Length: 175
Image (cartoon, rainbow, N blue to C red; front, top):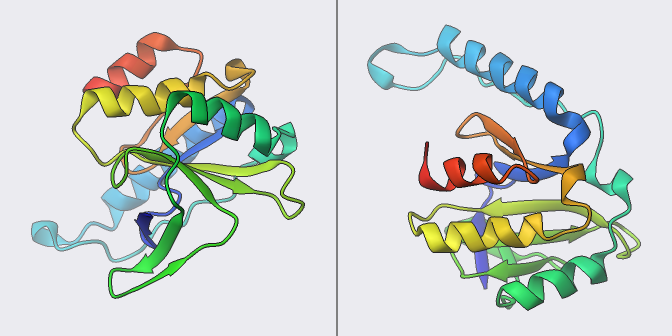
């Protein structure tokens, strides 16, 4: 079972590509607030930056859950489920599906209320294994149409279109 700590949930997500400009503005706003509120000697921040909701949600694209699961299952192992919370009180989250290689290399599918369409795609990429990172991103890029999707890594402060192979390669290698 994949465990995602509650603080890490949604830190890397797939959004509609139409959100690209908004993501860049939001990343810049968060970076400015972090710089402005940084405490001395790296002790944290005096204020938290809360992300605004994206102007368009992945659910608006009406991506069919069974199609996504079929694509991912051809490219990645399916995991037994997803748990979240804290390390001391993890709870299994019903209806979520996960594909990948376990902790640090997985994709989580969150279906909408009807369970027909994808409400969210969240990634766990906390691994230095380039092959695992590449295979996770290749699976996301295999969704149709990939040109309509982008990846946002809020922790790294970057975003990329999933149709841009050079950007994907740079992201995987940490450039």
